[in-house]
Length: 140
Image (cartoon, rainbow, N blue to C red; front, side, top):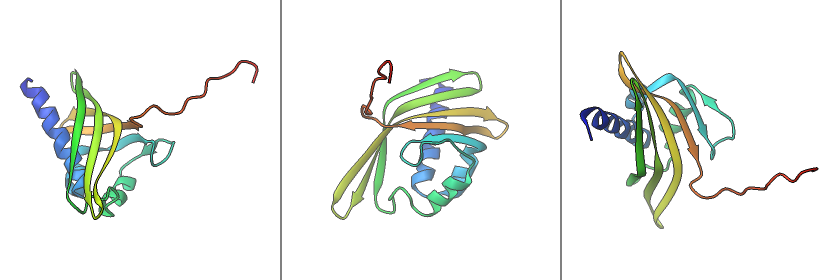
């Protein structure tokens, strides 16, 4: 891994940690105000801007008031000048009263490097299991 790749992965971990640690200031610093995202488990529509996530972070949406960890499976970085695309399967493990629970999904994040350093500009999340699929039947 070269220095720029390490910088991007370190940035991403700082950003992700801010979400689950409820660190609004770091989230604000690492996320573009022009953020667009798809979160299949929230709504089937694109969300724009930061207000929704500020509300979610401030109210502990992820259930991470307890001990937690996250893992990135099969991480991939594609770098195109000042634009980076990272993709991976995200797994969140949370300690609950009834034991450890795991949640996972596939995730892609687009980062751009501007005068303030790297920022997340787009996120796309999808289920990490085969979604139901119904083939289109001709004539129906």
